[in-house]
Length: 411
Image (spheres, one colour):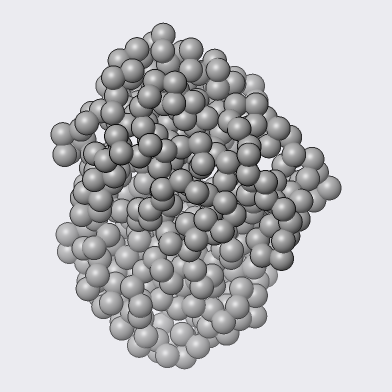
């Protein structure tokens, strides 16, 4: 098959969307499919463009001066559509347009798929309602959400309205962001979500197109062959690793507040960057916490750090739809700690610690209990190791291929 990926979150970025695209692209190509990736991008030199083209990765027209946080922003969808047809006319004969995210490049992929009568599969990755709340100051959230809906509705119709409620759309801004997500998904022919709990929420707010849960996988090329069971002795230092974004929605400050209440020995290594990094450093220094911030590092260095840890943490709450860091920990047999009950779906039962609530006090209580009963690390690690082969993308990609091959039946 010939498959074109479209994503506004890929080039020049790190994170779960990037990891899932890389793993799926490699697995599909290994199975003999032709895969192109079209993505927004920071400006590239001619040499960089040639190197990307050899991998069938192509930056679309993107804004040179305006960026959304740390993310490149595409030009208008109409500009991207014209560029695609002029520079890559071969995509007219592709079998599937596989779309990630909900901004300009992704909109262009959906619109062009409909114009060319090519089936479109939309992956809904994230909670844009919570993301907007984290990135935008309180007094501007409603204005920004309304403007984003207005822009989005220029290109894709918005027949579905989402009113405020007492569930997840408890503000006008959140309701508007759910409306954007739902109407975007409904323009595609088929909808995928990385977890059952997220798909249930999308359906609740009005996604009516055929939909399915397709779980992200770990790349075979990076899968460690021989991993030992982790263990921790009473009085030994608990090695904790953080390798998510260092940002508000990932809640590193509440986790550092929890560590300030931990009575036993611990060390936290933080890998990654984000808008809360400077604040987190100041907090750790002010409270004399045994925390080291490493910033972004090559993946091989990160995997070495994961393999040496006793506990991997993901402490977002009501935000993550999957949590790639959890299956990265599973690949290395490392137990995980989280406080969002939805994350129980991602890793095997018996391999994790679920905090009683999302508060720093509850997280500290769970960590202090672990230090008092360190034998739990070995038990949880054994569960991870018993199930880790299940996360390989090569075992999960067949399900995605079946969906693609059924593309002519979507409509």
